[in-house]
Image 1 (cartoon, rainbow, N blue to C red):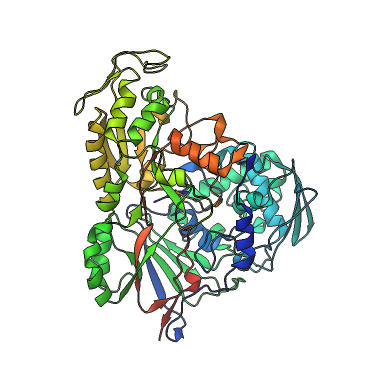
Image 2 (image 1 turned 60 degrees about the vertical axis):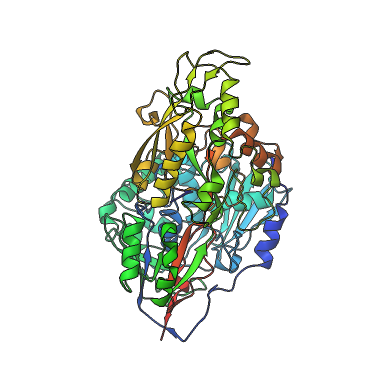
Length: 596
């Protein structure tokens, strides 16, 4: 998922995730303690700057596929089959908070049996396997519109399913699959949906079993999609009132303000103590910080890195600081299908030259004020995990303008530092610029970045200066986060939507829906989230996770950037239960409470 962001892989050390799931599951509340809990009250959470939740239907396209929409909005009301994140802040399945028990694999790992727990919808109806089948049926008929869909993976690898009873469903797969990979990167995508309320094709039409035919499933999907795009009705639409999560949306405004009431019928182990939970929108981090310093309007906010010197002042106002470390990687995108610049970035040596011009250590020391670390590949270095490899962590293309100049000069470019580098040896073969690159082609790119974060603006200005050392010109513009991610659908060169050249929405990728970091959502050919249109047959195994991550660190499918902490959280000292913070950046205000 975009943070503010396989099949065939022989996954090294993958068994560790299964062990963690069973050995490290949390207690139901996963809460810190302090003082005597008080029932009731309203807690407020500051949304990231310029980032608003604007899609409520859990089966969403790449244009809405973000942490803000999934982890910090949808999951409050609609729970996925398996919950990621335990009481120790690790990105593992927590059975205690999942809708189902851990799946049982049989027949050489080609059959999966799932047993649901005793959860209920807010209308009193039980969550059943028919609700699971409803999701599967909608996905099979509309998979090309789902951001997490990857050709060959779920539901393509599902041969059939059988509802045994209201609590047991059996999936028969097309072959044998690694159980942990299938659990973490396939089953976590499933979000049971209330078939008794949503299996309809119009607002006034009756509920039926339309999803059981492809044409009916398309009609239901189109209806629910249209309803989800009607954000003005979020607070009143009866569809969104039928929830199985701990929170029900009761008020929503187009600027991103969202108010949730506790779902009194929530059957999970962590019953909400608060009456209400409110998400507050901000256009910039400066605006949020001004409100944070002014009083008690925000119970759970954040401090911009550029204001870290004021931490002691916030502490004196009753806030506790906690760095929020996400499970992800940070980068910005190049469009491989842009008709003008696509042939340029298709050359690995060009991408390697650009990566060699990104001074990550300086970015960490400067704009990030030390709140982050260098990041040179797809597998996160933090939180601590058994998958990150030293080759990727060190980075095969660290900052070196001399390396960038050498790479370009040796491939037919006339390099003009602080000017414009141009191709003087067009064509294929050694010493030439590459196919599709004409003589005189300049190394000039447009780059649109997310507004609202001062850190991102500072990084992009520094990047523009660094790139000029090799004569690469970057023309910068900015736009809100939601505007930029609306462009992030796979496209072809002939489409008007493919006109962008580089995009930086101000973050990267959080491994939330598919938490095992194999990266196929990001880079697999045909993936609904492969917005850069990158394609490389090597990405699709077989191979080890280590060989994959090192290959991608070398190939530079995206331009890797330093990985910041998700945010420097500032939490009111009388608000408890908010720690540990979720590695996939989910919110669990059902664990929160004020003290008397």
